Image 1 (cartoon, helix red, strand yellow):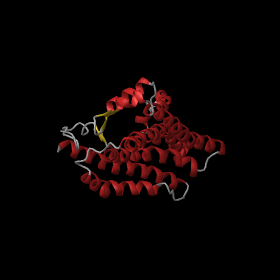
Image 2 (image 1 turned 90 degrees about the horizontal axis):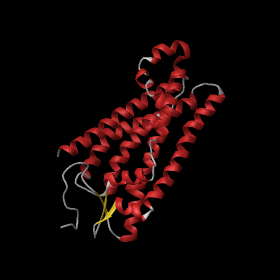
Image 3 (image 1 turned 135 degrees about the vertical axis):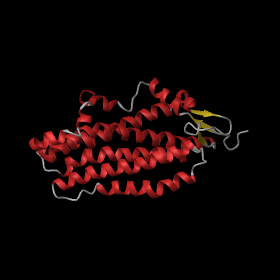
Image 4 (image 1 turned 90 degrees about the vertical axis):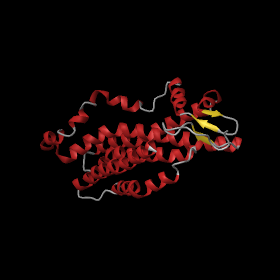
Length: 255
């Protein structure tokens, strides 16, 4: 069906493009100081995975409404884009020669920021999904199975006034610099060199890597951890509420 083909195509293209560009940026970070950047390896793996393995997975689970199986595709997509921002965002501060103070600030901002925000997101997910008044609207009991509503999920988090994109708000004043990143190198390389460009882009990428890794936490919690916990407690399977915008059809056991 069309929506399945679109989902498969978008996921594969994002694997190749995001993985490839992320790999290229990461490789550039290493080439500046003449070192091999080990962070290139996951990028190459992502491209191979998106080209050969992911199509097979999508084909196998194409008829399944299982929340776990549908979560595999969503989780994969976010891992890909997380790599795109996280690797070239943090690796410059790990391998490129720079003043020690700048290196410490960059690593604290990149690694420490990611860890801290993921912990905050875990607490936010626990606050929503473990609250029976909220979770019953997200995971609707249909008798012999639960159905997960992604729309109600978003509404419940809005109700608690929590946004997974909050770290990105810090970049609003400098967002206009992103389109200029295509021409900035020609302007700034004579002034700060290639390493300066990588550090500059790294500082721009890190806030978005923090947001994406926080969303990874949410996906794991919503599509894997809590549904498994719900199934163990009730014995009922959990299904996705609809087929990613495609036509609905009865779930197993539903008349």
